[in-house]
Length: 375
Ligand SMILES: [Zn+2]
Image 1: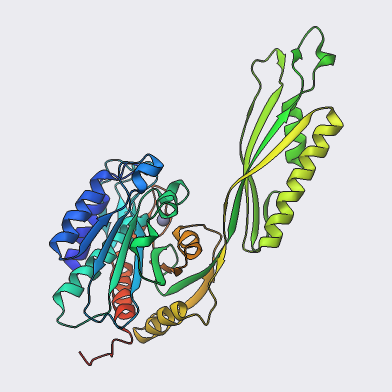
Image 2 (image 1 turned 45 degrees about the horizontal axis):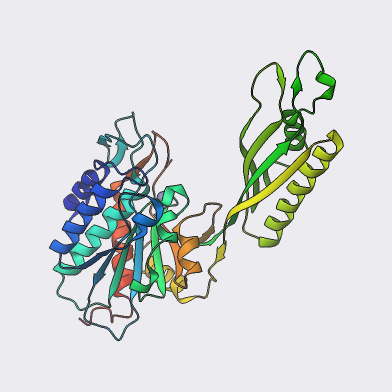
């Protein structure tokens, strides 16, 4: 492994602005780099579908051992805000932003790790299985890139996504279902002075509905949140409308459905009592996934982690990611912890050690059953 190159690549990547849907620059950087490294590169049409600058990038490494099942590795190239003009700094082997922005290790760390792996695959004389690399766009907006990925271009049935903020060696095999809810409350408009008794206050209905809903961490695998509320038109008018946007997630589908039904019942009953109406639309349901402990993809990641001195452990999380989407499309995938810390904040950081360990881990996964040492 070339540690200087890895660090340099990471620094270069975080300095290319790539807010979700504005990934044109980074995708063309990757495209040039990967072609230079001898890979076959395709950019799919997801960009047009989602109104972004670029589609997803798919790169194929032909390892020469087509008799072995190919593997897929993925990372997303977009970042959240504030993510423009990132200036990475190093303190004692740990990378931070200069303080005004995120670092963008989520998920440029995953991209940098895969680029180093691709360098190594080309430099080593060994013969490998085929590997497909997928760099997705607009993950942070609800996995729009992965949802619009052209799956007909992929042959792999097993995938590893380098986007976990747990420490290197952690295998995330269990991720939640998530549904967003839009609650529209309708009351009756009236003047706040004359005739106020004719009004039905939609904001008040919204407030008591929220009050009666269990919120926050419901149990270790279920959460409920109301994230925005809007409504009304002026201080002297009884508001006719209020809208609440929220979400429910759970690793257990039955619990997810029960919570959604409860929210619906709650708001409808509250509105009815006040003489108003409530309608609840459930949108953007994302399927949860549990990849079983005995599945080949988990086995592969766990076995080699142990071989190289990492402590492999399985972890469930409450985060949705490209993992939810790839599994839905028949690619049994897990998330690998790569040791990013405090993503989506200005304190985000990652150590060089995590990056190098992750490179080793991925290389070992690619090489396993290739006959260690025999080529
Ligand atoms: Zn991420």
